[in-house]
Length: 125
Image 1 (spheres, rainbow, N blue to C red):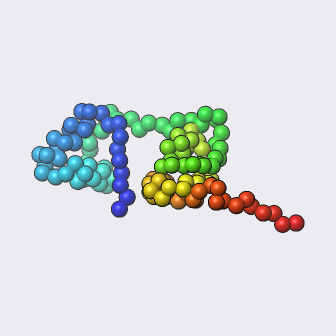
Image 2: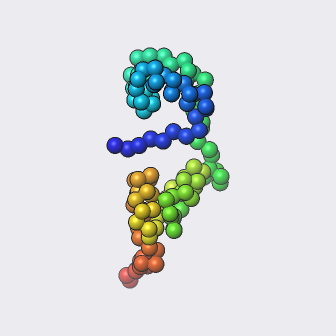
Image 3: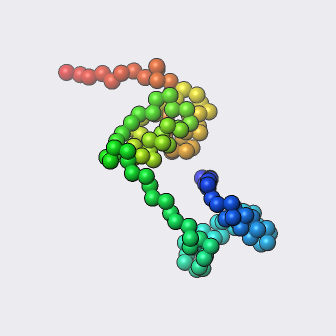
């Protein structure tokens, strides 16, 4: 099952989730899933979430989408930044098997091995 990591939530919301889950004797995960499930089905109104605005995606720096290759990719930190400004990765390369595994988990895209093992494309006339 894929995991979801939520970052940068306000302290008071984090505390509220903890208090509510403790009061219901559930884990924070189970509590948040129950809220999301209820919101998805439209069964309840959650006024606590009314003030939270969904941030808009930042515009591309150049104003137009672009493609890039992710050489020496590591776990994909550069890719994250480039995708946030409108980029689309068309190739990735990383030699470390543990970094490849993390990269693949995050992006559902397995980077190729060491770039020095990559052979140039040949053209035929």
